Every structure is written in C-alpha cells, then in structure tokens.
Image (cartoon, rainbow, N blue to C red):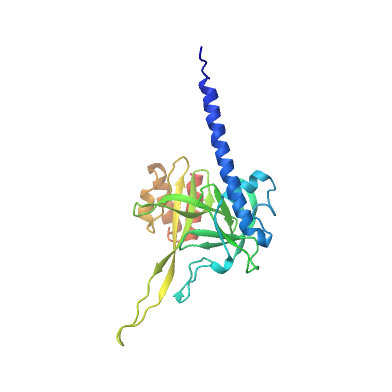
Length: 264
C-alpha cells in the first residue's frame, strides 16, 4: 500500500529547499566578489563588523556590482554633480537590524545608487554598488537611509532611497534627495547663448502613518498637506500650524509638526 507524507512534512521540505537554493546563490555571489577583490586583499564583510560566515554571505549578496575605482563614469563638462558628495563618507551598513560592517559610501542621486568601498583614500580600491534591497540600510548623519516604494504628489508610485528623519509612534518622516540631468544647448549663432549641461538637486519630504503600507509625499502647501491627515487630527494640526507660523516647506518646521502629530 502506498504511503503519503503529511502536508506539514511536505511544506517543511519545500522551505528547506528554498533555503538551500538561497544559500547556494549567496555563496556563489560571495565567491565571485571575493575573487574580484582578491588582488587588493579586501573582501567586504570579512575584515570588520560581523565575522560570521552567514554575515559574509549576506553582505556579498547585497552587492550588485564591483568595478575598479578608475572606471567611475565621467561627468566632465557638466555643471553640478551626480553625487550628493563627491568624496566617500563614513557610514555603517545594516541588513535588517543586523549591523554588517563599517563602510565608506557615496550616493549617486542621479542614478539612485549607493557606492561603497572600505577606504576613502586608496584610489585603486574597487568600488561596489549596493543592491536595491529594502532590507539594506546605511546610516547618514545617524539617520537610516534605505530603498523604499513611495507615492509622489502627482500620484506616481516610485522606488528610490529615502532617509528617515523621524521614527514616531504614529508617523514617520522621510527625506528624498534626487538629481535630474538637463542637457545643454550649443550656440548656433551670436544671438543664441550656449547653455552647459547640468545636474540639478531636488529635495522632497514624505511621511508614513503607522499601520499603513504607503509612503506619501508632503506637498509644499500647508492646506494640501492637511488633506492627507485623518480628520480627527487635522483640525489640531491646522491650529498648530497657524499658532506657530509653521510651513511644510521648511525641514525644521516639519520636525516640529511631526513631533506634534506623534503627541496627538
């Protein structure tokens, strides 16, 4: 007589198979990354921070690409920069709540790409890019920066990096800095002035209510922002804005507004 395995056993076997496939993928990625950086003697995830093999595998799978620093894209003859800072800044890398290691990062806000390396002074050291994984985060001025899905004021759903400015019990406040490229214009005659290509930086603010799986942009108009709030708290915040002469256009004022929101 044929025997049948219980459904719980089958389900457990499927989960184990998925874990095996994931670990194999991480290990293969880790080997490839280690080989590409072996010449410099630096393997991200093994020299500092968490020393477990699992952490090394997780960190290796968090990297989307590695390239020599000399292969940095050229932005010559363009006004402005694609980077928030052209130099690499110190930071900490996390996967979920687990600290992985100390790194140096540079944020390409035009491509929305976080570049990392282990030393800001070694010109020949390879530069890696982080995967756009929502569990990966770095610390920017002691604030968590990670990949998110959000909705703009024009009702467009986008993916990109947000920095968490406040973590409240009711509302979270985020900041987005992105850069747009505008092509230049060649002078065709003495009456038409040449315009150089340029990078222009823009800043936006977003918020998320606790328990709501949606991050919305804060418009630069107080009245429009109030419409995004639930009616019970809307009148209180409206009075708070008027009494303190606050504007959602100012980051310092937004901090005060969200402190008040989380206290109501």
